[in-house]
Amino acid sequence: MGYSANGTKIKYYLTDRNSLKNLKEIKKFIESAKSELGNNNYYSAKSFYGNINPIFKKLPKDMKKEIYKNIVGLSNKLDLFYINKLLDKAEFSIQNKNKAAAISAYNEITGLYKRVPLGYKSQVLKKCNELRLNLSEKNGK
Image 1 (spheres, rainbow, N blue to C red):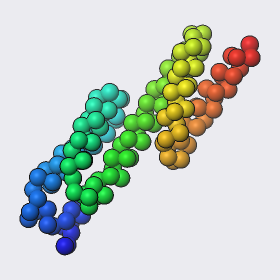
Image 2 (tube, helix red, strand yellow; image 1 turned 180 degrees about the horizontal axis):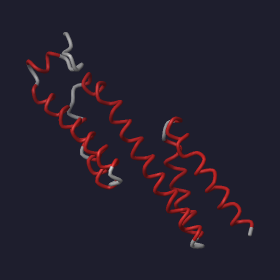
Image 3 (spheres, rainbow, N blue to C red; image 1 turned 90 degrees about the vertical axis):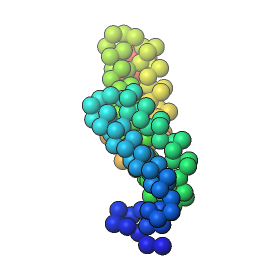
């Protein structure tokens, strides 16, 4: 079956309008989440992201393929944003001599850092290394 201009199979326009509606809704949630991240509203963005999975499960396999990359990209952006928030929190904690809070933030960062792709890691690598060094210096003193 052929594709329309935007990549969605024509058969869905003819037979499965519900799947099209679900796909549109997912795209709307993705855009809303990105917009909220752009406004530094992490928890609101995360809320929009949380609405995606139940709808995604209802999509036909070929539609899932079409939108999956966008969903993963959003997930990575959310993780990167949160890593940056944790880095700020850890830095603040170190400045205020709250080593336990800094270590807690660092431990959470390492878990998130492991699952983001290399391109995203490179955006926070320097700050993560600085935090690790700051924590190890504080341990030595």
